[in-house]
Image (cartoon, rainbow, N blue to C red):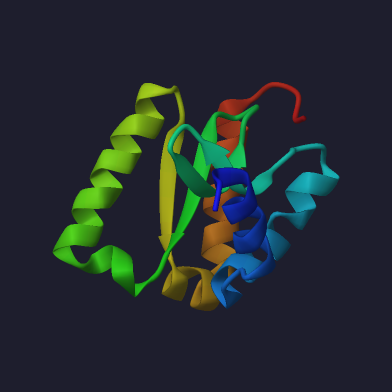
Length: 118
């Protein structure tokens, strides 16, 4: 399966934390910020990206906490940072149980990015 088709498939099969995070982004989207979900960037498909703010949001499940998962995430983060993106990771648990805190952090990151949202 090519990367674009895989990204489309992942959008259809979002996890509950990914769906909740997408819903959290609604207010920012209404304010003019543009986000893409399950978006290809280089060899990777990121969970959420705001290209204007140059920020990637990853929602991490249990597989990311193994030694191999953490090593893969470090490589992925290095790649994305080398392309000018800031990578922010939230756990599934944080998204599902601390939505207000996640929202405040996202808001602060977008405020730091400044400029006109699009």
